[in-house]
Length: 142
Image 1: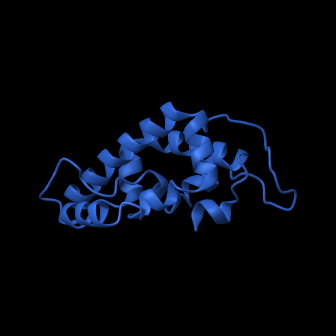
Image 2 (image 1 turned 45 degrees about the horizontal axis):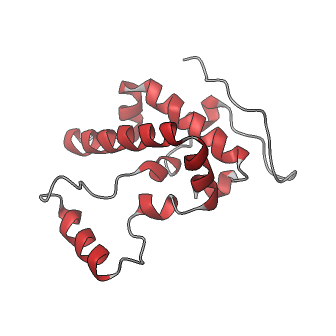
């Protein structure tokens, strides 16, 4: 698999580690993918979380709930989304679809990405862009 090209190693903190290679990223993306999680199936009232999330949203509209929503509230994600909205939207749609497939077919994320290697390349592009906005690997993989 040919790793995608990307922006230069533009780091805001000189002590920060270099951006991971595609191969290194492919072995450590698990928490990063959560930036693009769909927290509930909005069109599926059968989803266990749907009713809970909708009630919390109505009762506490100021609260950000769900892992994906929480992750997307970070400054570097918002900068990424503002500058690269098409990629962000594409990843949200793709990861939402893959989450559903993962759940329905009882697959691991490794198995999912093996079926859609281009998706992992898109995720890597987002990782490099967020790093260029000052996020560290600790920020992105925690």
